[in-house]
Amino acid sequence: MDASGPIAQSAQQLAPFVDAVLSATKAKQVDLVGHSQGGMMPRYYLGFLGGAPKVHQLIGIAPSNHGTQGVIVPGPDGLPALTSASPTACPACADQTAGSAFLQKLNSIGDTVKGPSYTVISTTHDEVVTPYQSQALSGSRRR
Image (cartoon, rainbow, N blue to C red; front, side, top):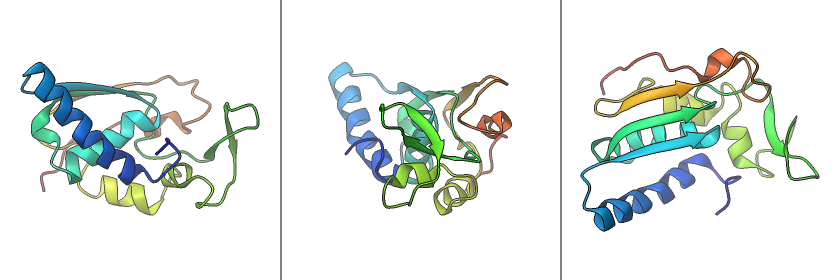
């Protein structure tokens, strides 16, 4: 599946990859680094798929933690462009829209879960995840 599928399905693909890395390296935990959707999608793995004990740190670079005001879809040149699209054309784009059902579920358990440490790297000049403050995490709430 490419990165345009539903984000929950991408998180399900992350689970066996993390398990394979842990098995191959004999490490107890991994550090995850992701950009945009890749900085937010692992939070679903941590909070809903049992990944928190396996992750030491999640670093998000310009993550869409609380969504964006626009919908992100690939332009004709393959580069991201802000436009509107149907959820069937790009489910991940729809999932990253501020207020989406996916983001409501993701953030319903709090921005962080017990265990991993979190780092968000963002800029006030971001033109994709807008407003840029939506990238920030606001602490934890235990389930």
